[in-house]
Image 1: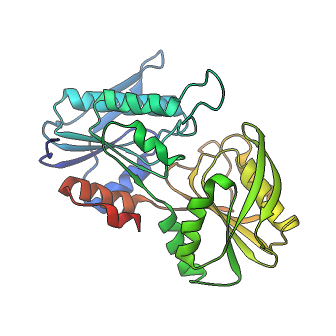
Image 2: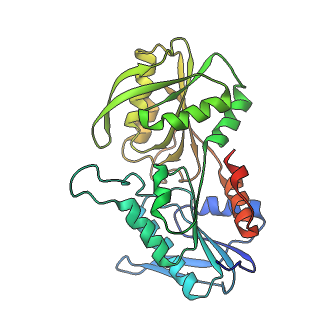
Image 3: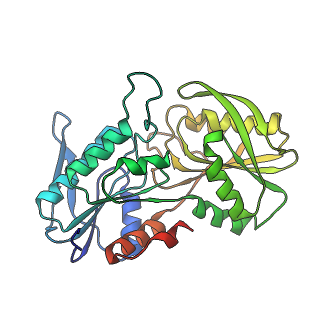
Length: 320
């Protein structure tokens, strides 16, 4: 049995400190002292600035860009806490990198998501708390408890407040066949009908829209996805919904805004009127601000999950 820590301690690396600060503020705990830097050759350097012996420790770290640096920071931090006799260590990973490499798509491919799961376990984590894994089966890659929170209820609450329940002017659309289950649950929460954009992916980060399953003519469309990387697929889907399907407007929401390469320019130039993300990944510091992009915070949800994990009570209510 995993020992219950005597006190909650929340630490963070450099990937998303603002989210960690929000979580601490809502949870009513102080941020733990840690110095996360690099040696001259680029190696990760972690120094814990306070004792963690017997504590219930939560390490908040999205494995986002720079992905490998963020991942190593988290692993070294977990190792440092294990060697400092932390009572229990939970890796809080709002965005789980390498999740798209969850199977062998062709001969001699790695399954990197499984490798990362092994690394987190070997480093000394006792459990993992994450959000909207790209593939739900990744939960089975871990031999320790994992809680996979859902971002759709946050978006649903936003649209229920702004659009209302059962508004016949609107329709939920899945940008691809793989997101159908997510979009169906989302549409049920809003009381809306659903359509699907059917596409063929020719190569990584490129897609060709084929047709639209469902009638979106004259509808205002809400596109739901789990992540937006280069934004090619999402923007092509939005364009097809207007030009082929006859939708009158398109807004989009996705849990993780990776926003690599030309993503922001594509969103700016697209027919998408508003792009909502959760703050699991911070807005790229090296990119110009995009007025279409807005964020909703996951801090209240993660703060509630941390509290329930510490109290060893069920977190199932948080999935609704």
